[in-house]
Length: 250
Image 1 (cartoon, rainbow, N blue to C red):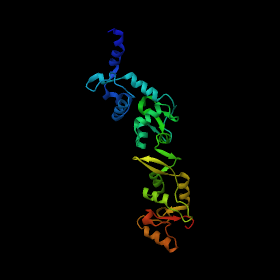
Image 2: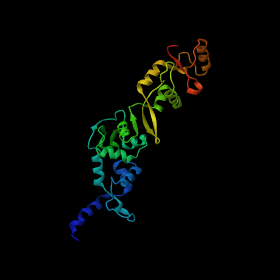
Image 3: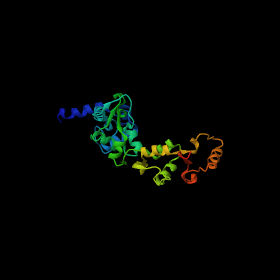
Image 4: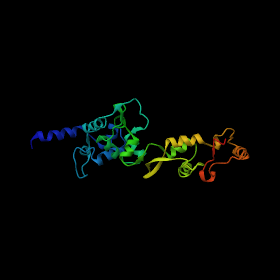
């Protein structure tokens, strides 16, 4: 056969590196490297039936460079990530979504908000907005908000308390906390807590442990002191998982 037909293939074989070295070369994990090949985003120099070994199963380093260049095709350079921005792998992990699905959104130009860390970080240098990705892959609906866990942390309680408040009414007949959307977590769509709703709750109610005079070693003293004034928790602590009092009563 004419030599010029073989030369491009020979050049690819010379440049090829083993699949095992892909993670080190572009800064991705081993599972991510395997997914890049399985999805077809990267291809072995020679496609075979799986019996070939050695450099035949390697990847042209030029293709690796082209992938990183394609990932960094758009976006603005930053010194550190902005709030809500994370790399492809972390974003996929947070949403329990396939890494290649998130990467495909980036490569196909569907993500408008992209940030670029120094190019030396390669695969980890491209940051995407978690909420935007969540909306595009159907892992999120509604408006931005706090996860149940985040809301629980702010209230100094547990997740079950937040879930209770999302379903319960306050003394005025309004929902104690309001949901503003949903986010997928562990394969299940879970509610997001509205920011304004949480701030309103914090301005109206206070946990027993945050009331002046509370003593960790003797919470009953504070409880009895409030009861003597006719003040009792707004919701049954056994059901709510926390003792909340109305600030206006205090």
